[in-house]
Length: 99
Image (tube, rainbow, N blue to C red; front, top):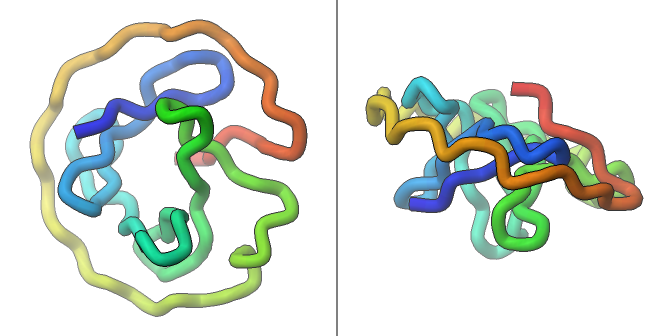
């Protein structure tokens, strides 16, 4: 399990067994390991892991205009808790993911 944070350091998601879950445990996306990106529940580019702990949206990602199709809903995993704030960081060319 990897706890993921936005650019402000706020805990926003958890990456567990190839799936992305919000902080309440709802499945919100899937990981495509061959591309290194997350897609949302509709198959659209959602974001990627930056610096090991940040889930961010890359402004010029080549995957933004591709639909990968629906991978289904893997259910709810429950809450893993709040990992707190890990501090702010600025990453040029990235935006916070809208969850």
